[in-house]
Amino acid sequence: MSDATLSGSHAPDDMSSAPAEPTPGARHLGWALVLISIAQLMVVLDSTITNIALPYIGADLGISGANLTWIVTGYALAFGGLLLLGGRLADLYGRRRVFMIGLVLFAIASAIGGVAQNEAMLLGSRAFQGLGAALAGPAALALITTTFPAGPARNRAFAVYAAMSGAGAAVGLILGGWLTGWDSFLGIEMSGWRLTFLINVPIGLAAAFLAPRLLPESDRNHGTLDVPGAITGTFGLLGVVYGLTRAGEEAHGWGDAGTIASLAVGAALLAVFVFLEPRAEHPLLPLRIFASSTRASSFVAMMIAPAAMFAMFYFLSLTVQQIMGYSPLHAGFAFLPFSFGIVIGAGLSSNLVNRIAPRFLAGTGTLLAAVSLFMFSRLSFDDSAAGVLQAIAAGDTAGSTINYWTAIFPWVVLMSIGMGLTFVPLTLTAVHHVRAEDSGIGSGVLNTMQQVGGALGLATLSTVALHFTNDRAASVAGDLSDGLTAAGVDPTAIVPGTGGYSYLDAAVFQASFAEGATHAFLVGSVMMVAASAVVWAFLRVKHTELATDGPEGVHVG
Image (cartoon, rainbow, N blue to C red):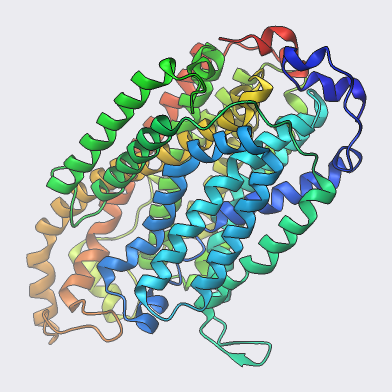
């Protein structure tokens, strides 16, 4: 990397100083990108890698069904709630340093989770994994911004980063399904679910070891940590993310007192946070980050689009496993085309963004994703009481007749290409022309929007799905009960291996789940159209501007 490139990534105060000496990381941009991308993939896939292993974890450690959800929720809560703090710490104390600390914490927490002997030990490890991810995630994105020069090199780096971020959820499902099926490793007998944690240990430690050799350290800012902002911002986000997660659970919902209290306290703390930040000498979140309409619209779009995408993974994975009857590993591979598609879309986007305005790429990508979600809402099979009873009598699931290649595969591919076209330009515009000293917190805001958006999307679409599922269940329960009785099956008898579900419960689920899921896909399609509208209306930056780190960007806000 040239001296000019290095000096171009600093604020004006630094521009007059002597050019920085080339660092080892600057001479190995390709390897630096590989390192950052692997770390990002590890952080993202951990949000889904344990999903398929949950029943096995519960059986081994004696964790109740209600508490099993905390294995997923605990990670998301810590990750989403601590992202702003992680981003600011990277700005203050060095992005490479915080990146390495996050990776080491993540690896240690993964090791603890892999050898956990009880519920408390496992849930604690998941929370510490979230902490490590919240430190490493924003620092990784900021390192791309400050390491790669504006233009094609940075665009390609963001394409790889976006592909890893988008494909992580699908890779997590595949890897989780594969590892969960193991019963030993290197001749040592162990439950396969433990490997979903232990696999992170060598990856995280190796990445931390290589970081000083491949990545340049950023300048440390001359400031102090905004403690009041850190407390109000962090606990406010924790309250909101926890409340949204709780709202999406059938046992609680939006009207639950705990949900309302959590959202209210979180919102109040965030209001105090917004009040304090302009008055702080060294704010945790400089509000100038939002001064650019381009950046603000990118943040909003990057909150809405992942909300619909993550919900798609949730409902489609349940549909494929519970309705179509796929095994966990088979279900994971059903999402494999998504991983390839998003890489194709991101690569295409990184090349076109040098010649086409970002809003055309992101606007087109979100519309493609909206079409995909709409087509998922058209999934159909015979879920009448008679059809479900006939499938059960034959030993099948009600949706076993759904053809994956015509009903699922085309729209998974279209969705992934659309997300690849969307994530690259929106990531570029969200962090472009952010002051060098704010790149960590800018990345933290972007990551926070994605996490909060994911929680909001899942809570909203779960509520929609639950409403239509319950209505459908009430209308078919009587016919299913009568049909089971007529077939000589006691509707209240427990189905072996289901953890306490009766034959009537299983039949009602088969007949009603798709009603809720298809309506959730439809609302998700509307959400994606809303994200597209934000992009088309407010994302005005030109493609030529993305190739610069000019003074006008440094002085935003």
